[in-house]
Length: 135
Length: 137
Image 1 (cartoon, one colour):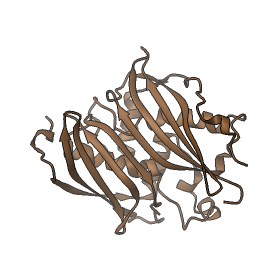
Image 2: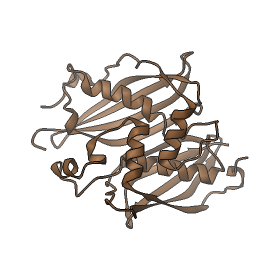
Image 3: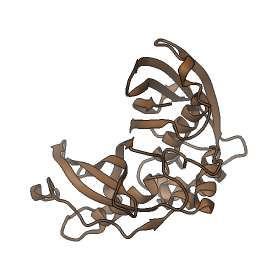
């Protein structure tokens, strides 16, 4: 069952604010062998916030995505500034593009990640590949 | 202090080799919140046609970011980073793990920053598609 064509262009409400702690950044840095010196977070850390927005999309019953058929196809970040401890971040996801290829839905998402003042921090672009039942 | 100022177009950045073990994936699952069982259960990985537990694509991308930090002289210089997840990195259930190699070439230097074309391989095969980054002083 393909996702509905009206998904393209839809925007979803921002996620609940995520408070970035020093401990969480240290944990993430240690898990990836990266350096965290109390300043800039590891570059891929915003995926934690973007992931919450993507999960909300995939679990939204009106969207029609089956979670177990989703593969993360592509990820790209553009940064206005690095994430730092003390940031309160929200991600607002939009579906930019929707294509059908070989029975799979290729869902292009963009999550705008902003801080407590609503200022931009990072944009996370994710391509989700939703395989059809027979694919 | 950034090392970026000394780079010129065409520079090959020093190759970085990282080892990935099952324990790393468990730590990453906890740190990232991505608990998909294909990253820790051979049984579940097998049911979806994988040869075994695979690394999170985002874990591999994080290793690319780690190499970028090393080349830039510290964290906080990445302006853009992206890749396609083209080939899974299968992580064996042993103490040795598997190696991931990150290479980079300076493609261009503009006001936007230093454009780096990455190559991320494991077992001699590319595991990320078109991995690219922009670094800024």
